[in-house]
Length: 219
Image 1 (cartoon, rainbow, N blue to C red):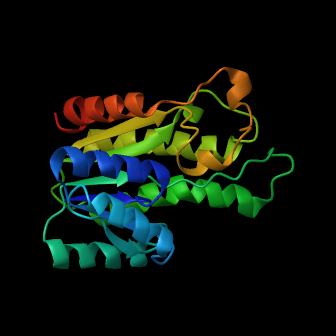
Image 2: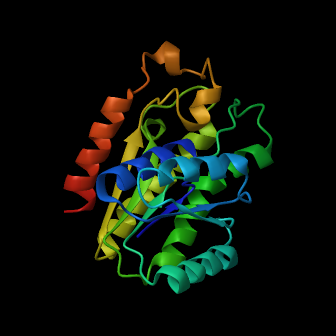
């Protein structure tokens, strides 16, 4: 039983497919927007591979709403084995021109959600917690200052949790996906093509999931 915050997004959907296809796992998605036709279509597609993801609408930056979602999951399923932070907000712009609300919106997706995750799921006997972060924590791209700041916080917070929690707490710093999720809508991402990064193939992503799952999250 695995909870994915932001699971209906592109990367969350790919990871869900891996869990369902390889392990017939039950996945729970928590997302801000109400379930719409796009989410229904994703659930239906993955449902052909195994258990369809269960969707709950809740703002994971809000403690009260995330706590209510957690309680609903416990009431329906009884147990949670792992939690994945897959929330991100990309709003590219130079810091000089960026309004505060734009900076905060991207930052909250990483900072607030990370903290709320710990507050709400911290007492659960989890096997693992996985933070899906970005190479932006290490190599900054123009227009990505807000996203980079959030990823750096999430990485550091995960490291702190790994020292305090009994379960495995891991981070994956993804590169340029290109055809998946928020990146799919960007034909010219600030700094990415010019910096030499290439989009990862489906096969490489699948191999990474497998390696992460077997060596890092499960032992």
